[in-house]
Length: 237
Image (cartoon, rainbow, N blue to C red; front, side, top):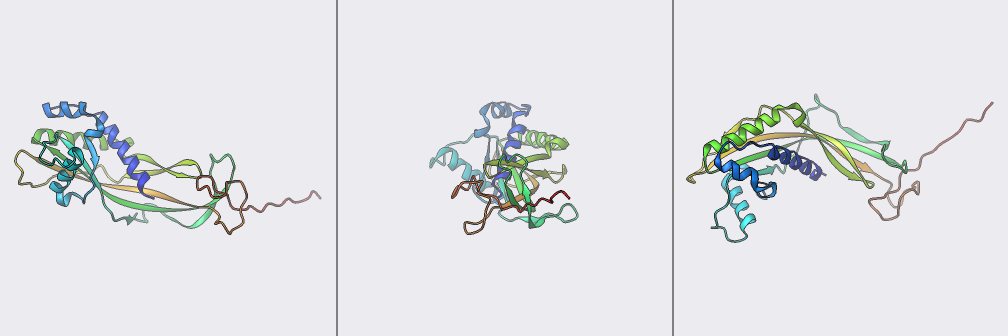
């Protein structure tokens, strides 16, 4: 349900990484290291345990050889497990299923659609061995988000064999990078809170025991039948 939002945000972070300017020697190595070795989703909790995040990344990168040094800087991202309904002053849900025909569906099937608008807390943690590098990465991300076009992107939700775009917005460009205290020497950690405001579609198709239009394939979740549509014609007088 929310995985497409995570994927879409990952792609946005990839665009940010691709546009970084190396302002320090460690950043020169960072921008040439490659995205998959520079930014990762953290498999642990959020920044309240920043050093735990780094430890988890170390294990992920080096297997069980946890004592092996890791390359810094690195950006680790975490998404909260909770979800908050978006303020209704900003948007509205579609709480009851509405009959729709997806424009790109060549079979022109009729489905039901609900939408759920949610705010998802996400945190970006920048780990660097020196303060100038951490600050540069944070400042360049703030600059990236200052561009309105980078605060709006699409998450693609798969249904009926189609990838359907629904909007995601970073709530605000006011995203300070907060220093996280650590006892580790030669380690600077800056954390940025980002609120992802998204619309999640919930499509429905007829259940196995319900009448359908016969346009899909039995048992294929990627090719569901649509709902029956009643049509009538008025004879000419």
